[in-house]
Amino acid sequence: MRKLDSLILKSFIGPFFVTFFVVVFILLLQFMLKYFDDILGKDLSFSVLFEFLFYFSVRITPDALPLAVLLSSIMTFGNLGENNELTAIKSSGISLIRTLFPLFIISILISFFAFYSNNNFVPKANLKALSLLYDIKRKKPSMDLKEGQFYSGIPGYTIKANHKINDKLLKDVMIYDHVTYQGNNRVILSDSAFMYSILDNRYLVFELYDGSSYTEVPSQSSRIKYINQFYRNNFSFMKLIFDMSSFDLKRTKEELFAGDYRMKNTDELSNSIDSLRFNQSKQKYIMLKNSSSFYDYHMKDNFILPDEVKTIRSEFNEEALIKDYFTNDKSLINLSDTFLNFTYSTLEYDRSTYSRALNTARNIKTNLSINSARIKSQNFEINKNEIELIKKYAQAFACFSMFLIGAPLGSLIKRGGIGVPVIISIVFYIVYYVLNILGIKWAREDIISAELAAWLSNLILFPIGLFFLYHSRKDSRIFEFNIKDYFSSKISKIKKIIKSF
Image (tube, rainbow, N blue to C red; front, top):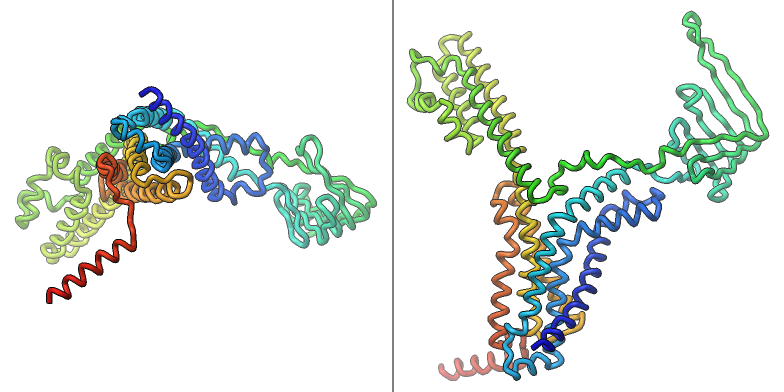
């Protein structure tokens, strides 16, 4: 049995690590293509690019692990079935469940590792990756002068070169200097220019040849507003040095991003959810308690009220507010609509009273509508945090669900290699991915609960895994399909039906 366990483990470990790194690389390419425009032309150093890729690689491990487990499980048992090794194991009296046992233990360990990584490593990687991505987006592109176009990337200067011989030699150069005087008061024209960087690209040097500078000095006298001084200087050589510090990558403090739900572990998410719920309940209570002051005419005992309004008034107390209205934001607006309609029907005899009551009703309706939208936004934030919290457990369990699908499925299809297993793995992973996306979208829109959204893919795939496990124990041939035999049997049935008539 130890030799069998060793054989199964060796057959699984190799494909698992290979497929894991391949999946990480593919998913990383997807992210790189998404942010390609933000990275291109920024002249980032190798260390910054390596840091960026490393953090994003850690960030996508929760998505890569389930697919790696699924693909390696199918490949392992597909190879055993294709080489008739699985048949030999069964013929020796060893059940399929016992054969699956070592990988069952490995899949549980991978699930625990997935949760630990998702709870400890991924939030920190998210913080590093997203803060670095924000800084990269803010970084200016590297200087790129194009022929016949003005370039204003250097603060205080606008440069144009009509002809570009190569990356360093320019012809027919025009430079607008906005530093010496505001506006376009100084212009430098040059027949040619040679540019290069110094001090580790800290400064850019322009060596200008055979040109002129034109300067208009604004009048400093308040009495003489429209008399300016003009200067023209010819030169055979001039050197300009530009500070390139604005092109450097400036790192933002990571603490500014720490409040995002993606940068928190389970304990921090639980605290955030409790705080958000408390603030939401507090806002609802204060809003409802203070809104009673707007109903000057509807809360009078000596006023003739409809039965519907009397019912609302009798329940309009703090206890009822907490009990009845906290769960339904629309009831607040409906309450204002009731008083607004009541105002139209009962107060027409007194125009001034009618106007004041109508304005009050409109004010309270607007106030409640604004607060209701704010509460809805808070509820959206609560849903995001709840989904992220529960998803950490669901993504870890997905590794076990994928093993439960992959191992029995491999023993049924009896195909190894990277052909059929890859196709089947992609199909199941697409189902897993789409269910996750739909679940998160529906939960954020408050269509389904956060628990159902996070566990939706597992609720669908886990029974499929049990179905495959059941048929693999019975050695069913559910994937062996002979088209010739199928149509022959159908034709025979049709002939029997025709002969019966």
